[in-house]
Image (tube, one colour):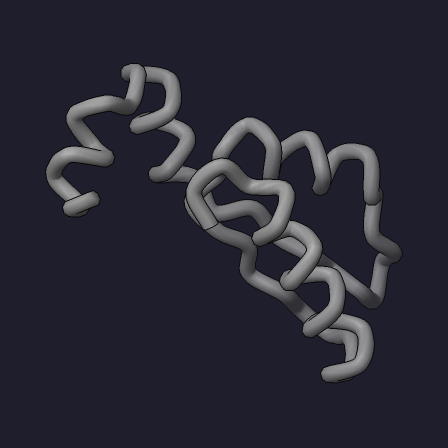
Length: 70
């Protein structure tokens, strides 16, 4: 399926969610409930601050699996 076709099938709310970049601040602790809810709602991405590769990589992989549009 092409990108244009995917976008055509998205609701306005899904398109708006794709414009949101949420933060993941490992130095302050991650609110997993909030983070997973954002992934399920289809935010456009996450920007991580702090955390090691062993913290960030598995979390981002699991968020991608939860997302309708990884």
